[in-house]
Image (cartoon, rainbow, N blue to C red):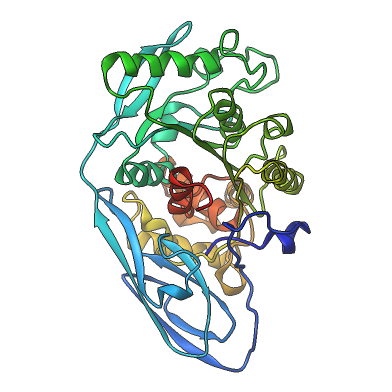
Length: 408
């Protein structure tokens, strides 16, 4: 589907039996070929035997979630993910994507007292009491930017469909718009890992106690955390501090101090071409080491490396704010300006594309004509397909499966 074998990229052995294998390059023979037919999705075409084939579901409406692939689903890396891969066999393949209705729900927004101040909080509590999942934004983000991000919305929908409750708040520095620890960033403060003196930890206790007092949930319900970038690093520290049932980091290697002491199952979802200066190849290697430290102590810690995936004409119409025809025009313009190369893989991350548009806007009439929301979405999707530093929904079912039953 989306994973590169870590042995090929970082020179380390895969650390977990949960990890998957695939890539973005053709392998095997180059003479035989067969046809792939994708029903209710994209990726149809003729492929050589041994090629890695990418397939995608049709856009998933806000009132639906992806269900599964059927047909030759045994070939697929994970039949539960909307974006999948398989190695082309020497025969024709037909696969069908299906979606499932999502019972309508609404995230409630409220300002709730934390340790010191009122906090912006978005939450949803259902009837199943399966578990509370705290979702954690990255550096410069907020509760609002997280819940308005399309990829996070997909995760929220999938979590609610799976029976989980959702809580989203923000770092104390974000609420105050102040760099409290003087590190030059507005983000979660990881150290000290103290629930009494560090408000970022204390706020989760205060907010959760409020939900307990209101009868929305109770202390017997397991808790989990999923974070992106700095939120991923904080997810490891938060899940350790409160002994959550499990935690997940996207695009952050976390702290070796935490992984050297924690007994909490922890999943890493990294990006192969992460372009964040605090992550990159060194951070990916550190994540491998941290997962190994946990695994070596008998703590479940699968690690996945999100690989580049092809751009396809309908990609940008995943979001309702961009039509299928506009998505095709965006695709064509990117291709014409050489941002889509061999086998439709992106040739650069969004920062490079953005710089090119600024330099020569006349070459990008379609992209230059997008509103801020549309352009931000295109940039996010480009980064995901390039496997840069961006939260991605390609692993939603894998991540949710890990929460409920780590490495089973």
